[in-house]
Image (cartoon, rainbow, N blue to C red; front, side, top):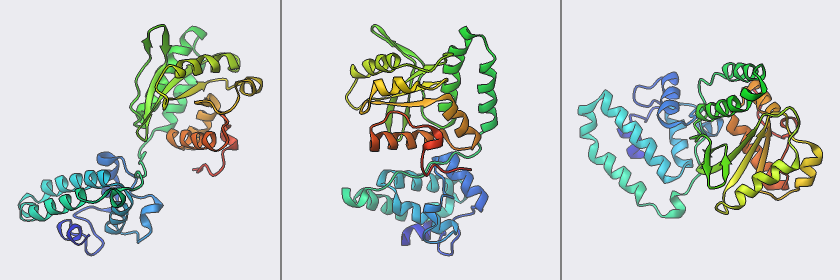
Length: 279
């Protein structure tokens, strides 16, 4: 931290030439990290204290990525000064790379979802509702793909394996999920859940599925499908309420995943999720 403070001019709480606004934008755009999250204010609210707190909490790879972006930024604003400190910067990087696994382990950083146009996402959902039944299913898949892009979940559109159709996939926190999407006039029955579970059974054992049904799921169907499966269910109402409350979709999904892990149940309604942060 002594080296960090010196080469990034962070001794007095400042950090390079960042203002409170520009450091928020920098960490959002360059690193997809919410530097304003409360967990990074444990040692104080200054820019330097928040970044130092972040560096102490995250794993070594994330710390190296943060330092790399900060160093490149310093080079862009003060190349000659940075060259004088280059040896110290490299020494700092090598010291982090040399940490043993216990010391270099840490928590994933809090993601930033700055500038999300929630109203646009909701209006597109409303637009799809007015389409004819034939068009709605396809447009719903396209909209979900856009939703995943907005929240940086690396979506892949529908694809076909031998004898089966997969509506898409996405990534969250380093894990990949297959997706099934249905826009039907009735609630999704157990048969559709079993069919999707069958697709998952043919994949790697760690593969999980997310079933998104616009009309939700019948209570009888959820009972018949049972607990302990590899599917997490999300209704259109869940997503609409989530976006209306300006809650990032990954936060909703993480809460549902936790509920499934703790209870075995594949579905919990948005209104029944405990401790989901409201805007």
